[in-house]
Amino acid sequence: MTTTTDGVPAVVAPQLAESAEERRQRYSAGVLIIVAGVLLLIFLLSTSGDAKFALSNAFDEVQLPTVAIPGVATVAICGVLCLLAGVGYLIKLPGRLPVLAGAVGGLAFVIGFLAWAAAGRDLPFPVSNQLAGTLTVATPLIFGALCGVLCERAGVVNVSIEGQFLAAAFAASVVGSVTKSVPAALIAAMIAGVAMAALLALFAIKYKVNQVVLGVVLNLLAVGVTGFLFDQLVEPASGEFNSAPVLEKIAIPGLSALPFFGPVLFEQTILAYLAGVSVLVVWTVLFKTSWGLRIRSVGEHPKAADTVGISVVGIRWSAVLAGGIFAGLGGAFFTLSATGAFSKEITVGNGFIALAALIMGRWHPGWGAIMALFFGFVTQMASQMQSLSTPVPSQFLLILPYLATIIAVAGLVGRVRAPAADGIPYEK
Image (cartoon, rainbow, N blue to C red; front, side):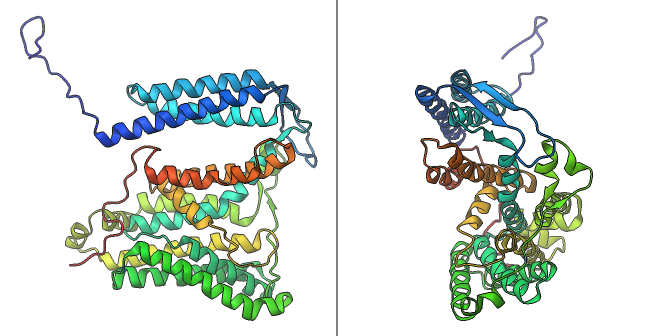
């Protein structure tokens, strides 16, 4: 027993023992960051010249200067920072220092990688295009993550985000082509997303089908139905049924004229603005309203919720259908943001990336949106690398979001815990 100088027993704070799972995750994260640092040091061997970063594109009214930094020194410093951050994870830094170390390691790897890619190139790396494209690419992922947050916070696993995207994209294309109206196309996409959500709720909540298997089946159903209708209806008359109007960028007066930040943040499509607003709406609903409290209660402890008079079935239905609205908006992006035309499997797995963003964001709307931005950043970076003629194939960069999915599922980003009743059918 520990005592003070006057003989009075001292109160010693209990030390929380680290579980085997936490230790494994800490070691995994530390090794992952160290590997990133080692890669940067290897890249150092092929780095030469300055890395140039353009803060403005050629069409901006205000042209900001191009920033040049020494490539070798930047890559070397970032590599060392990654190594130090990884070692910090392995030796178990106290308090919240591991979180800081992880943030430093991740940021250092991104900066070091971009410096290596841009060093000695004829063209500078277009920073403003990178960030603007990140927001564009992340828009459907944010909607998909919000759909998953509502469903899984209520206890219903939603693996069918991809199918909801696909059905909504098809509906937006056809209705938009017939009506030549963007609002009509968006409404049709939301209806299609809700219809797919109703199928999920029907079989998962009422008939208690295994929700993971059900999600896979619904994805295949969406692929089959949209592919059949496309072959039989849309493709033979593409001018009539596959030429929807394209969303135009909306410049916010005053703010869009700001140097650098204006074109990036305040010159986006209506869907990008809606995605940002939707994050705030879902966060407010989940954590500031009685309905949100009921959603979280039926996802964590449905029996206790039922005991106090909350309809578990009704709340789960409402949450899943509300999630379908966001999935519909995300699906509309794929046909209305670029060409206005639908093609088979146009969503190319973005629903699964949204699911990964949901998991990495720990079933929280804000963190899920941040992870969606991360995936958007990586995807956009792959296209930017093509103009720099880097030695890394852009196809390799395109697999990074899927690699991050594996990392999330394996738990290498830290302990993630789904709602306690997630995926468990409720029976009185």
